[in-house]
Length: 531
Image 1 (cartoon, one colour):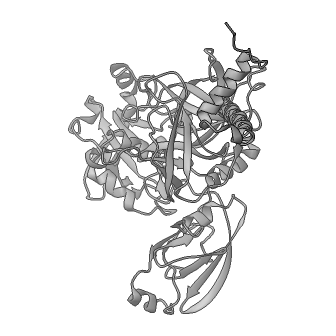
Image 2: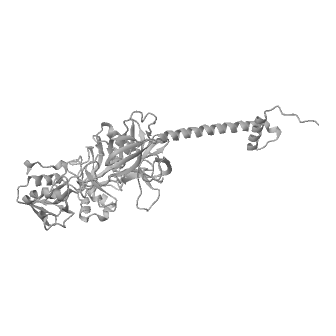
Image 3: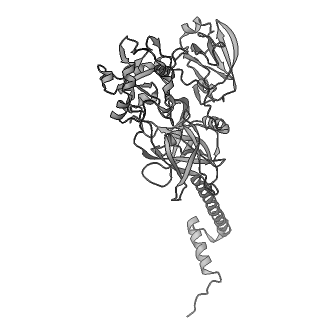
């Protein structure tokens, strides 16, 4: 029997060629050269795909290693009983490594924190961290780890440029529900001014439809391996899903520049307030032509950069190179418009800001120095962090300054549950004569305050007939009082009268009965000589 000849070709190679030929499709013998060419192309494509996949994996791994999980123990002051802290709570957030061996995260992640730790990707150990710089207005903070070697294998992420809307972005972080790093994708859908939930500042923000949950806070928003945002908050109220906001590059860059000297000067406020000029009649009344737009100045604060330079009823038509539209917006790009305030926010304290005005129908250009914002242009100071509350107990009555920390103590629904008189005060301007409001928060029942045990949450306008300027003025007047009685009076004429000698005599009893460590916050301690 004649045996068939064995092929000289290695059977493994032949079988491999046959497999490739099967993938590409069988060819007649006459097309063998074309088939081999196609086989070579297929091999090259597979190699190229493998290299691209390896490069993508390496890029992803580098970004992952630069995303840090942050653990904090936070104990905020209790503004209802300001000598105490609320129960400490543990929370976690995210951050990203940037140049200078620093970790960029949210301010609210480390606010009121007594203990901060950082954990690297795929590393079970938690390292002690410390806070380097905080901007509560921008909800951004810088922390670092001092232990040698912590940053050696971590590549700092660079700050990129804000992309145009409809660009896909990636959100990195450590949300609740697990310990490993999470990466979600979404679309940049909107860029405009938003109220930052942490401290109530009104700054530029980006909106994305990626899933954002507790623990994501402080994580980077990435495009092309660069940070184009820091996740700060998600939409609340249950009216929308997968809607979150991030701090954009311009605000991040401002904070990083501000942090250069370690002193937080914040975003400047020029000291005026405006309203839009949508009405054609209003435009005509203030001297604007049909093709002119701007915003009407309705208030100029004393001791501000604008005082003496800008007048009420001026119309601001441009700031620097940004023309202001009738709705108060400026154009940042072909796709992005936002409130004109952003043109001021781009400046650091000490910069010069150029404004173009219309005054009595005539154009006018002025240059203002960008200065630090005053403590508050409203009678109600904004929320403050990382500091002890101020208070004074006199005659068993607890007096405190009115601020947003106190108002928010009424809970998440504070805008409905806080006393109306305190809420309404947010709409009143401050002045050098009346910079801050003082609240008689509660009465600690004792003989010295009989008749007033159920009085609470009322604003003190005068002490012994003299208007109250601020809480420091109020406290100093109590310390220096020589009258037999102290008369506290509100704007409606209601009076609370405390005998001064009885108030001083009752101090030790009240401290003991209510287990209070001191009658005044530490910054307001009175010496015996002041009495």
